Amino acid sequence: MKALFVVGTALAAVSCSPGQEQQPAAPQEKHFDVTGWGKLKPGMSKQDALATGDLAATGAGKTGSCEDYRYKDGPAADPKQVAEDDALEQKIAEAQKAADAAKAAIGPEPGPNAGAADYAASAERLAASAEASNKVVQLTVESTKRIADRAEAREAHGGVLFAGDKIRMILPPPGATAAKDLGKGATVEQLKAAYPNATSAGDDMFDVPVPDQKGFVLSFHFAEGKLTAFMLFNTEAACA
Image (tube, rainbow, N blue to C red; front, side, top):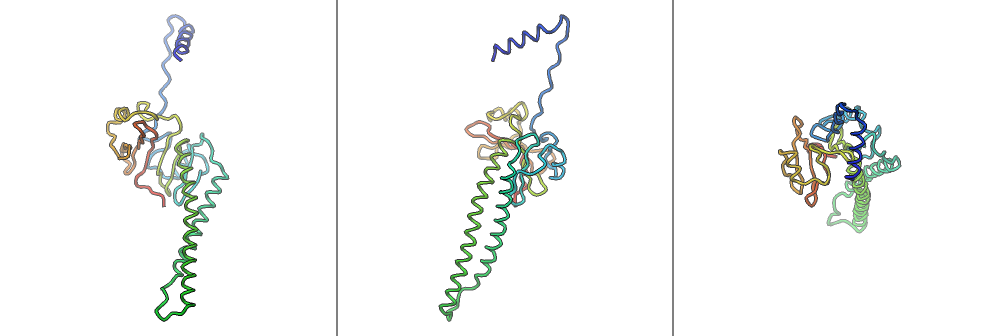
């Protein structure tokens, strides 16, 4: 690598005529910072964020009030997977409605003078309610796995997670760095040098407050002393 650099430098020197001034270096690439990424800024509404054109035209998956969007120039979400996610969320909503109805139908326990038929009917209602609740649990387990898969893709490719009309997270695309070229693999010492106002948020996490945006922080996550992820996070926007 060093040899290539030396050769490249020599060739550059030869190509310049005597007395010719050296061209200024190219401007440094933009950083992912408290101000956001590209045209995406913390505190934007979903409508305004989508209007920037920095995100894909369609979402990458939805759970409750939260919806993922990837960057326009990043890998596109699988339409089939997105459709399956949407169908699963619909099934969960329908199953929960059925479970609520089954629970409400249980009614009071049979009284002391109730006959065998009353006890049998009550047992059937209890069993039906348990079965309906179990269906919700099974579907939720499947949904949780899909949520985890989307979170993994979000961290790998970057993008935005909306909670209703609010931005919940903005994650940088691969290769992006924070201030002072702080990137994945950096140490806590390097973080503190780049962001002296970073404070510990517990569990190997550090937060930098975002000016004039209540609830927003630039969050840095470490594992074994190395930076593994960083994002803009809205602590006041939750998925419902």
